[in-house]
Amino acid sequence: VVRQADVVVGADGLRSVVARRLALASRWRWPSRIALVTHMRGVEGMGETGEMFVERGGYAGLADVGHGVTNVAVVVPSSRAGELAGDAEGFMQRWLAAHPVLGPRVRGAERVSPVRATGPFAAHARRGWAPG
Image (tube, rainbow, N blue to C red):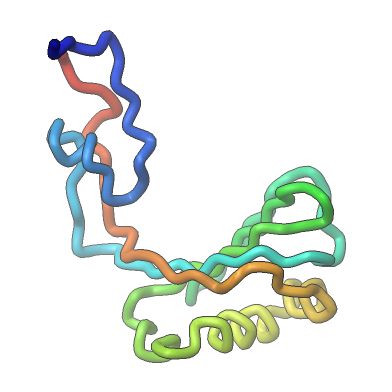
């Protein structure tokens, strides 16, 4: 028996099958970015709120996820992909260390998950719903 759902929630991420099949999202060429994400324990000065550090060459976000662990994300233009190829962890460490505020805060932190790369993020949602 096939039934129609009253509501379908597409919380399936950047390459959403739901959004694609319902023509809710499209890919853009610009701005094209790559994200590097990891978890670190012991980031200095973390509170209960998330933090963003934005500069011309990219941005970083910090968010407490509990038990002294912080989600750390660095987002850079995809034109820098060659710099991080084969060494995403090293690229992320160098990027953070070079930042005058973040460098000292993560210097003594322990990485507790692999550095993962994802992107590009040049996507746009036309709307958040579809009829039927």
